[in-house]
Image (cartoon, helix red, strand yellow):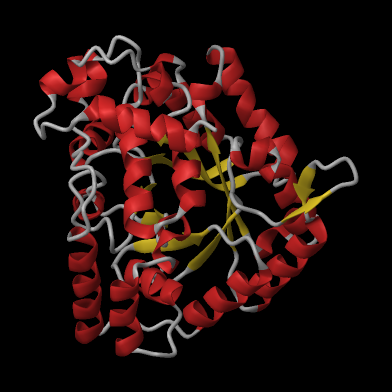
Length: 373
């Protein structure tokens, strides 16, 4: 599997919408077709979707705007199987055929086991999905098999040890999380590269938060290059890393596509002074007061209510760092809704095991008020 540096991927996660007469929002396929055309006309060909994206409608949208409109050999399709949404092994395996039907792709250039980490990793083994997907690969329905993961480097290493057959991995990498104790972007990237595995980068702009920097941080980048959009710094940081197969951007407007295409069509790796500017930005972000959660998850193990404490605290930190209400809410909905902060019974067990001595009960009350409206 050849790795190409500086390649832009179109993430079909946050798509343009229109509101119907009944008030319901649907994907704006006409606008999306134009966005796809701009992307393809610029020479970019990698599309990333998943069973659960956009309320389960993303794969069908990809069929309507890409697969049905372009020759199959002119683009690459990646999608993902979320075992954690399945009732049982049969249900999980049926998702593969559903994705084939929904996308109309005929085969998948890249197929991923979706969102490993925490207790989710075990489900893929319990349902026998690794062997099942290896069979699909042998049948020619999958060209490259990999997985996406939101977890720490030690967990990533465990998955690699258990499944050395993987062809690539999809990781959350951006300059803000590069040295994060919670995300461990750098450590995860280095773990993958030690195995000589190509990396697909997700969240390079941190769900859009890195275009909503505090003024002090944004001014650093504007002073370094007044003409460079804030998003371009994030894309170029990820694309400058050796072994990166694709840098995914979840583009939701024509303007975002046009801006990102301009950045990546004329891609140039970051120069030393540009890296220094990003380090300065990271230092500014690190200096903003946040909840000092390191995602050790001791609190989760002890919580009698199963509250997703680190996810709730992460949403509070997104607000503190970037003022990004949409992204903070999105993170909460994706990662904390099955263990909401409002379930907290204020027993204090979490606080008794927290190495950072966080007032977790107080912070969960704040998260419930902000994100459970």
